[in-house]
Length: 185
Image 1 (cartoon, rainbow, N blue to C red):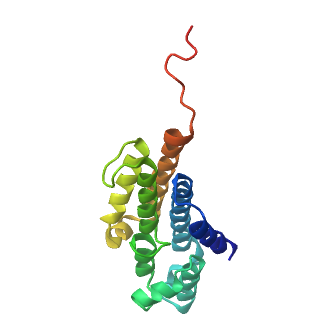
Image 2 (image 1 turned 60 degrees about the vertical axis):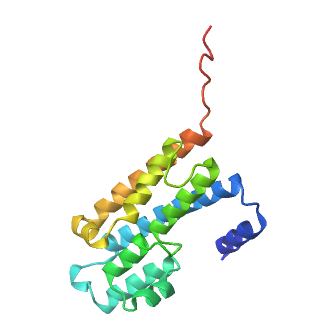
Image 3 (image 1 turned 120 degrees about the horizontal axis):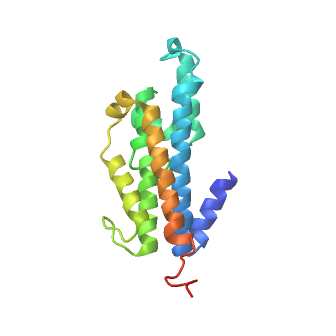
């Protein structure tokens, strides 16, 4: 509840300037990363046995996953019955739900472009290029090929690319640049 309160206060009382966009950028990337980790853990660790798939026990765990990211009600409105592949699709690829990975990456990309002033679809720095590639991958993804190729492997790659975006943010915006010719006598 305190996080929701902070987000509401930040959104309604802070100027929507560069600082606000950096907060939104970081929040969005963090949320996307944590959602992938929650899904990854559930998909491969929480279920004690393959024989439990599709049982009430499985449904309870998937409901808990949805509730843990405040997605239970919206998922039920969109899909009704809880099905693991639909939960993954909703939390990974939904473009309208604020806790979905795709939505978060899109919001992060919008925030980054607001910071740099570069129009969407173009890039002026390495961070925009990397984040734009990640956004387009998710915009055109479908859940079935992801599940067939391996969800864990997909999440590992996605998390690695998000970490790369973090490194580029640090390099493009926060690392001190050494002036050319500085230190040369």
